[in-house]
Length: 405
Image (cartoon, rainbow, N blue to C red):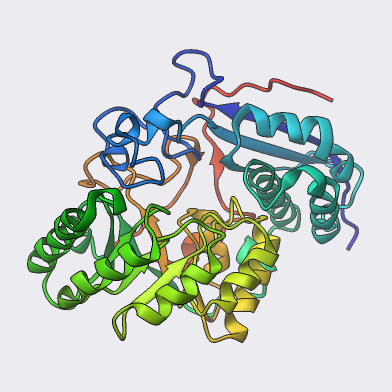
């Protein structure tokens, strides 16, 4: 089969700190922290900045939403287009248009691994261990998979070898696990609101939150805590034991990403049967290799931040070799097409982006058209059968292309 070459790559952004007033600001998108006021995702959630009173109440106050949404579009010389979204905003646009384009244009639409390796190698001198550069590379990689699927007329999960189960089942992340249970999810993951600077009083408050939700949700519904890099080993260990009477399923991302020795110690110290999970903010394949060696139970890469689908497949293999699960950080269709092909991903994450968790809003709303949401906590594989990732850009969203090449 003769395949076309890639004629052009383009990068656009929406929202973030450099957007014009009203142009995507506070509306969500791939940078789903860029929400309006009175949203649970920005309500006194524990962070590495919570120890400073000025930044304790709101994550937006220290700039969690400054990047905005990055959109990468790739076009084949037969006119077929693929795209993807992630975080990266205007800075990601610069990287794509002024640097990464040389590795993309002129290649066959099937040269995804070659392009990926050249993007990684070509940015290594300024990419560090992930972050903005890796977000941008991830977005390009996802756009390439979308284009390849659209050119050959197949959904991405079939390009990866096909589904290993008929449906995906989800837990929900948000402030209201009791509401998540009513929607049919298998569990609910809550953010912690207190940290080491709050002492034992903080532990008591977050444990009381878990106790309250256990009473509301019954004995068998999964409850988990997302600590978002805000703790140290001692505090996390004490919190885990304080929550053990309420059958907490796992405690997540308690420590900063590179504290591998800390994660190994935490795994040894939590109550028997409680899982330790992390990986959302790890950004290279090598970092996941080291993370796997700590013995954490579940690795949670974000496919839009870890190097894209190409890297996510490799991370899943690392986890599988050690008997670990890989449950990607919620990334909507970009995770769905991968998870349904992984034998060590028995469930997935759905992020509740409605302000009060009372409705099911697509995670990247409003930027995608056709983005599925779970029904009864599940998505059947037939929902994923459109070519590529099966979604389109919302033409009503105002996006800007700040650079050309």
